[in-house]
Length: 79
Image (cartoon, rainbow, N blue to C red):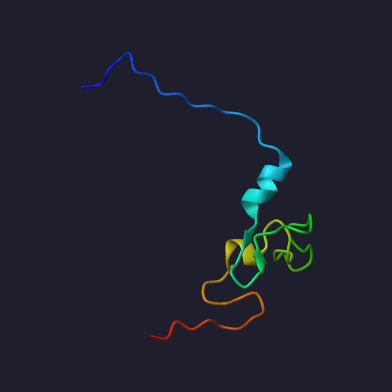
């Protein structure tokens, strides 16, 4: 049975830009930084593809087409 008099709390607040930057970056064991946005661009206006190191970079969100990396090579799932 649920106790009506027991209340749990939830705190909602604003987050600083530094905290968002900390959440977005991940440092791999080899020292490579993944997830860092270094350019303010989203898409290239002629090719309509995501800009490298931009807000919609394929390194952050994964490839647009399944099995094809940004450089054009195919990733094979050999078992």
